[in-house]
Length: 268
Ligand SMILES: Nc1nc(=O)c2c([nH]1)NC[C@@H]1CN(c3ccc(C(=O)N[C@@H](CCC(=O)O)C(=O)O)cc3)CN21
Ligand SMILES: CC(C)C(=O)C(=O)O
Ligand SMILES: [Mg+2]
Image (cartoon, rainbow, N blue to C red; front, top):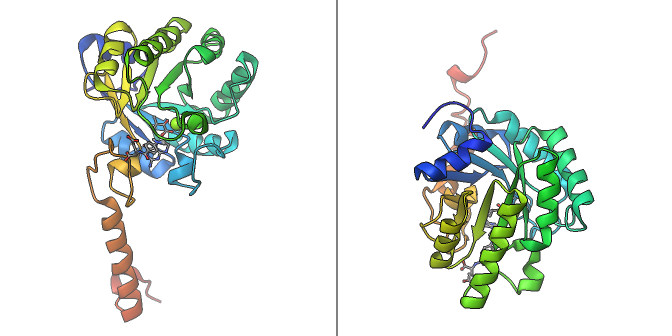
């Protein structure tokens, strides 16, 4: 692992070398600098900020303004990681002009290195327009949470020959339009493997098995912050419990009068 900044060409080089890419979401400067120091290659300012940080039931209410505030903090804190911002629901679907206007605003106001949005062939024209404008695009296929009302909830996508074929065709369409990577969410492992073989650009899986070029998780799931997380999200820590213990210890010492002690106050 290098300590130089991760740039767009490193993504494809990592795939060519068979080096797996690591990606986590981040929504603020505090966590972004921790994950950057841990050597995470890519930080995603996901629209999952709506669920995880703002308590929304879905990603649908998330606004461009909410993404911009978070993305500016993450891009400012990351020294090495490649930072990607999600375009939220309603900010790119209308066509290449809308997508370009949103993406240009995000790039100008945040300092991220790329944007990501959901969909296959239906957004290929948007991917092409942004790429032609010099903005790297990460695709997102499989379970696409912004379409949860149409998909009928969080369900594995691409099961069965026909659905797998459609998913592969969508992945190829994104790559041909210029996407620099594609996230595969809740896709059967063999289907994700097949797409990974076909594409020259890296695939980044979440609930898509191990035969992909990288993995992404929502950081609160990865760190064990909440009491619920999707089945595909392994808890690599119990940070929620550690944070609760710290808050309780603080409260106990305040109530007993043992904090602040001599070391944590000022003499006359
Ligand atoms: N905390 C969090 N983690 C995520 O991975 C995540 C978000 N939020 N918000 C945005 C999207 C939504 N995602 C979701 C949301 C729900 C399920 C879910 O309920 N999964 C169930 C059922 C899976 C099935 O039908 O097979 C599960 O038990 O995992 C999965 C992914 C993934 N993203
Ligand atoms: C789950 C990842 C891929 C995402 O899009 C998000 O966090 O918003
Ligand atoms: Mg997202």
